Amino acid sequence: MRIGVLTGGGDCPGLNAVIRALVRRGIPEYGYEFLGFRDGWRGPLEGDTIPLDIQAVRGILPRGGTILGSSRTNPLAESAASGGRSGLERIKGNLAGLGVEALVAIGGEDTLGVAGRLNAEGVPVVGVPKTIDNDLGATDYTFGFDTAVNIAMEAIDRLHTTAESHHRALIIEVMGRHVGWIALHAGMAGGANVILIPEKPFSMVEHRFQTRYAPLVVVAEGARPEEEDALALADQRLDAFGHVRLGGIGQVLANEIEKRTGKEARTTVLGHIQRGGTPTAFDRVLATRFGVHAIDAVHEGAFGMMMALQGTQIVHVPIAEATSELKLVPPERYAEAEVFFG
Image 1 (spheres, rainbow, N blue to C red):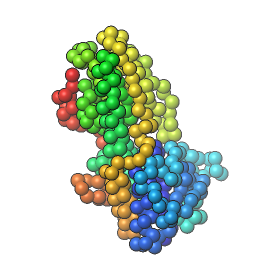
Image 2: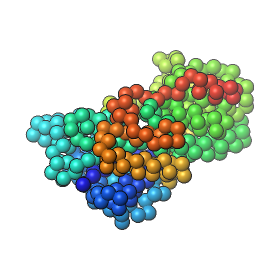
Image 3: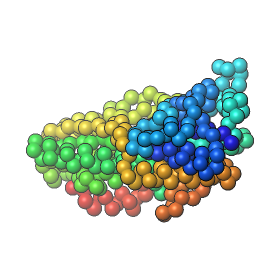
Image 4: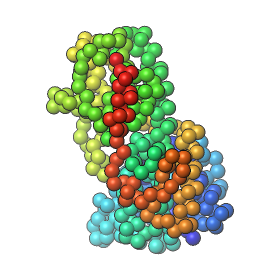
């Protein structure tokens, strides 16, 4: 049996651990053959593959990124460019031509959304959840999240000392388009004075920045103020899945703090640092477990399912259920952090 593997969306620590686990479980245990598709959904759209064997995955466990490459190619947006066939039809044709009998798609809501559509059209697909944002509702945690939080926490620890030395407010902007899990966990672990997340529009309240001489604010890139019309926000370019390319709210916030309080404020944007580099032990183990259970699911014929961590167990959940809604930070979790604000 020939299995296709792809990694889509943003790169993420732990992707290589999944690929390694699939191959190292699937070849000796089940005798499967593996093909890796390059650059997310672009690979199956164009039939661009590389062979995956034991030698190919040797030594990749601690490596960040993905040996297969990734992209935000959206097959659902592809159409008449190839003789009138849709993107999904092109993928189905290429998979059949390559003799690929099942596909393991590793990605977030967009990648898995396409995987779910393919499965509904008869392509055997198993999903593995990947996102540093930790925003897939059917799993307690996604790999990459722990690494991103630890990177952000270390940055916060270092920024505390420079904030105190210069008596200035410091804003650290972290990733989080629609959800604030990274900001919440990193902010709590790093002892931030204020945490701003997309789920809770914030108000520019001056006393928060006057109670301490060197406050540190953690803000998710998707956070927005209540008085949004009064603030100049980031550019509005869209990616292939129609998402706004975010960034810039940290600088907007620093400008407003200076204007409204007279305090000097500086912004640090972590950006892609959060999803680069070697994964933490937690993410290596979780990604490996996802990979092992994913290839077992292929062997069992459990197609249309995504691997999920629930408690300490890896379980199967329908891809459609996993991508139906984002896992938002609930009010009670944010309230736990608010106790320490000020």
